[in-house]
Image 1 (cartoon, rainbow, N blue to C red):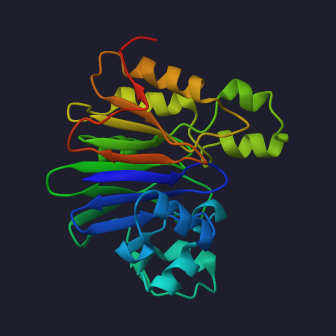
Image 2 (image 1 turned 45 degrees about the vertical axis):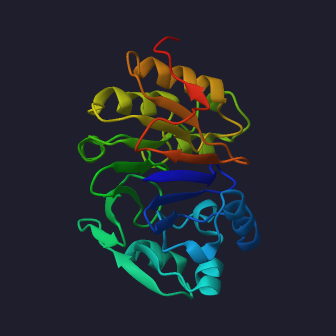
Length: 265
C-alpha cells in the first residue's frame, strides 16, 4: 500500500492511494492537462485510475474532476451534499453515505464527517486489510469523532494549514482570517500537532504535512510544531508541497523521508 501527492495547497489538491491494482485519486483540484502531467510525473496514466473520490466542492479540490472522469470514464464518489453543491455535474456519481463504508477493488474506504464550510464535506480512511491510511485536510477543528476514527493508522496525510501569528499579521482581510481560523475552516499547526498527541500512534509510521498555506505558514514552522508532538516517535515525517507534491511513499515499510524525525526540536 502506498500513496503520493500530486500537489497540496490552496491552488490545487490531488492524492493517489494505491493497493495492488487499485488506484484511487482523492480530489482533483488541477486542470485536466495539469492533472495528466502530474500523474505522468508519478509514473501513472489516468487510465490506470480506478475511481475519483471527492472530499468537498471547493474549486481547489474539484476543478478537474468532471473533465477527468468524463475523458477516462472514471466513477466519481462524493456525498449527496457535495453533489448538490456542484449542481450541473456531468459525470457518473456514486453517492457516499457518511455512516457507511464501501469497497473499491482492493481498498475499503471509510468516509469521515468533518467540520468545514462546505455542503457535506468528508475525509477518508483507506484499509487494505493489512494497513490503514488516513487523509485529513480542510477541517476546522479536531472533534472526538475524528480522534476516534483516526486511531491505529499506518500513515496519515494531515493538514497543517496556517500559523496563527502569521495569519493574524498577514495579508488576509479580517473576514477571511476569521474563516480560516474558525471551527469550519482549516487546521493550524498547533491543532494538527494536538491530533497527533491524542491519537493512538502505536502503528503509525508515516506522517505527511499537507495543505500548507503559502501566505500564512512556512514549512519549518509546521515541521517544528509537529515534531514537538511526535517526541520519541520513530516514524517518518514528510512534507507535501503545492508544486512538487510528494513522491510515492510505501506505508508497508520505511522509505527515504524528505524530513527524518529525530525526536528533538
